[in-house]
Image (cartoon, rainbow, N blue to C red; front, side, top):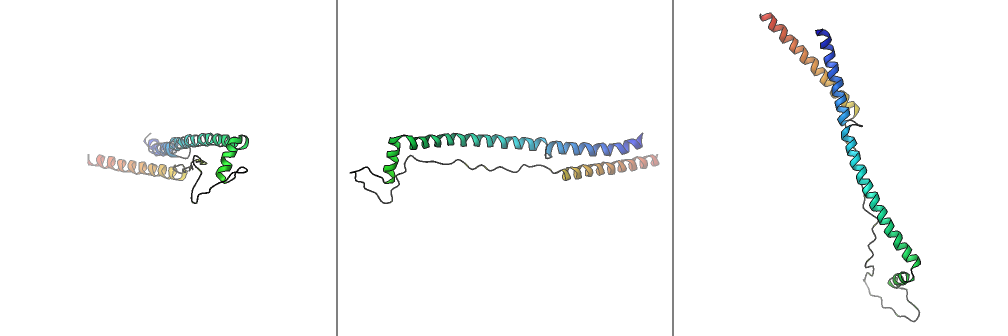
Length: 149
């Protein structure tokens, strides 16, 4: 019974440590899944903001295409004039007030953080070897204590 226990315990601990590490910190573990979920939510918010900005820009395009008053206003700002109308052009004067069209914010996707399978296996085997060494040490101490009696 003791020999089975000496063999099975290190194997069990090795498998348990590997399962725990890969389940928590592995590529498909809990930590990386949560990280990817937060990235997905931030990306969805960015896409929604870009959609609303696109809707605003579509409204401006429609106004510039179909509304004669808006077309005339922008044409005057660009320097076009009606017949028999004079214009004074100021130097270093920006007439683009009220037009702040920004395409949106830049969104950088971060790399997910996880332990590779190689690292998980190496750590699990290290724990298994540590258990074997501890068992050997305990067995030696037990044998030494029996000799003293």
